[in-house]
Length: 131
Image 1 (cartoon, rainbow, N blue to C red):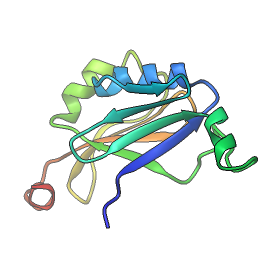
Image 2: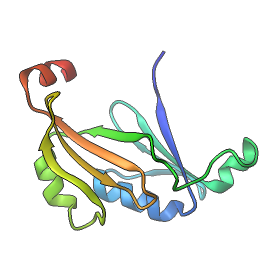
Image 3: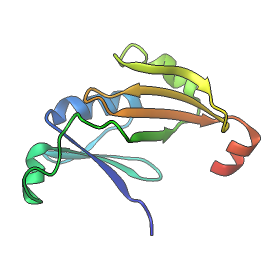
């Protein structure tokens, strides 16, 4: 089994896609006005409007209420990424900090309040884990 993608449902898809394009430096692939994906080497961040959920049923999601999931991206140099995005992100939760498990981590929120972690493995153990 392979985890393929993570999908965020939002009330303002254009704003959220633009935010993720800015912070990741990647360009989204739009499939419809209501659905786009940001493709990485290991997986996909899918972004859909609340209107896409009508295909599954009503009342299944509540955009902007995530309080228990962190979306994580491994980056080459978290300190350089922080310098690049710090003026584009209004809610930095934690500036780059080396965590006890060996990753240097930058934690911030997207415009919908979802926690995003950009991290770089920095200890030999963490580097080995991700190589």
